[in-house]
Image (cartoon, rainbow, N blue to C red; front, side, top):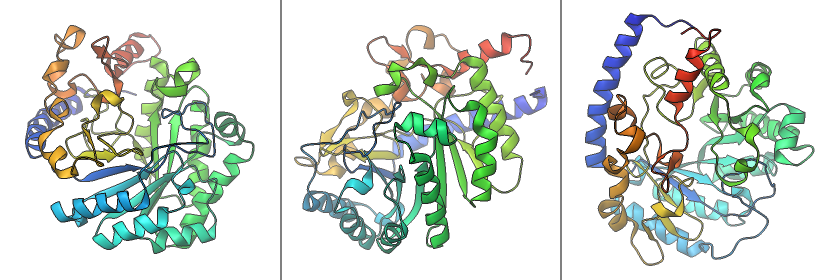
Amino acid sequence: MVFSSAARAIRLGQLKWWSERLEKFRREHRLQYLFWETTHICNLHCRHCGSDCGPAAAGELTTEEIKDVFKSIAEDYDAKTIMVAVTGGEPLMRKDLFDVMGYASGLGFGWGMVTNGMLVNEEIAEKCAAAGMRTVTVSVDGLRETHDHIRRFKGSFDRSVRALETFKASGRLRVVQATTCVSDYNLHELDQLYDRFKRNGVDEWRLLTVNPIGRAREDPRFMLKPEQLKQLLDFIVAKRGQKGLSVTFEEEGFLGPDYEGIVRTGLYYCPAGINIGSILADGSIAACPNLPRDYIQGNVRVDRFRDVWEHEYRRMRDLSWKKAGECAACQWWPFCQGNSLHLWDIEAGKPVLCHLRALEEARRRPDNII
């Protein structure tokens, strides 16, 4: 894909404007998005799971404990301005899910859920809507054989697709979204998946790369090579120019002026601790659930969420500590600031992945002219 120098200059100007706005966001740190990690229990054992979830868990918040947390947050903030993202494990494994989220919805919170789709049927879809759920994301990681291999469950693809169809047919949700972790396993299947989701009437398709955390570290095929990353981004650029299914690249890292503002609606930044917080299954107060435990700021069993949100998270709102090593001399530091926190190696003091370096490597190949 060829990018004109004029278009590149425009995006450089956008990036400068955006970096200045981010300083304001960090100072104000308005809570807009709250993850609730409902459980570590999952009915699958996926090969790329970053949370290393399984069939059992201990120490999870009780029904009353999590309700009290939502109540306290609603007392301290305007719940109508906060979207709750329900994650896991598999959220539908938690028996009190609809009780808790119906209560949260009554307080004013909007909410959505990420699910593997294994337990979804018409009854579940109705319960989700009745409890106030507005959006749903169903994970589909390839066509049938690929998805079933990654999920380690024969028939899981059919259940995931059926879940998308069931939620869409209910007509009760604002957004029905599919999400795909792109890897060497499924990169060649993206066009077929696009056509499939479009036929199913899916509203949005969220594409993201796999991070080298959890079980994914055990299989190098989950990590895209530089030319594959470029192939993925070019695919998204092409599909975003078409009508119908909305396609976007999930916040993963800074991509530079050739792709920022093109593969996703907004420009890159790591929102962890700036407008995103989370309550983990054991009550820990954190930001993105994918972050290591080094970033935990407190626990709802002993701390009021607002006190932690207003007075902690310093390492996430001032990232100057990351300006070291190869990042210190990088011309893109003002925009990237060491990439997303979940892609930062604390011990090594450098990014686990650098999208810019990968794209530069892909550009140096004679068959990749940008």
